[in-house]
Length: 395
Image (tube, rainbow, N blue to C red; front, side, top):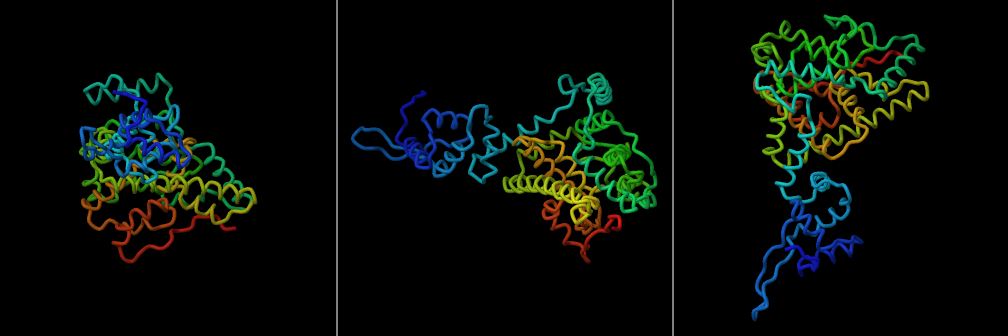
């Protein structure tokens, strides 16, 4: 039964919070416990002579109460509180942490979720129709990234050079401007979410659409020519209908929920911190490039931007810039997607002998925080790769 009179154990937590300049009430403790954010008190021995029994706070409660008092407030969802405490390394009950990660997957929606058709082909047709009717699109290149691209190209032209360099066309078997529209991208992303697959052509087109000022994209070309260039690898990683399987061939969200439910907590904590590191690195890189552009000189940061613009590092920057606000649920979703990607790296390593993982050490290929996360794969190859080719225009 609810009461505003705290037990002796709760009074210890209230006084502990007060000593740290926080106001906590018995009602607040009750609510936090009901939401799985705070463990119950631990029963103790009897007081003797019929006076009842004692209880004491669980040891972790003292830390959790301070964290909850810092973060709790009107409008804060329990799942957000759980993730904020998890971020601080506080001992949130494990079921509550996993439930918060699972809830984050629920924020990833596609138009056909309301009435999913059991027939896969019909569902894709319905999806295409709903996206067209609603005029849904995907932001392929956020405005900040576009301004940086334009600034680099302007300074390159002023120095008598071209960016992107036309020499890239030599490494592209399908050079030319991208044809994918933001609406096409919305359909491709939604379809990949519900099927767990995407055609190599769609992957290549999306990569090209994310570098719209380039007349050539060597990375996109490598994807598009996988079947021809490395048929033995294609036979392993492609489905019977020539689709790239993004993990298990099913709704991507089901796999993410499985990860939220089964991945070791230390793995979730690791990718949580790595996702945060990727975002900080991307925003820092943007700021450093913008400062160089303001001086009228292309420097180290601009070189880092250009080296990664076509690779996974550049995609991470674009993804970061799409989210001006990064709530805990989005942070958790990004962390799960990263864990998903790492799992795919290791799955590919088991399926394909001799994968050149040392290439991930090349500057610009993957964000530095992710590079640290895959050192076990990178260090397996000898010799280790040094820095990648520098594609900056000569100054």
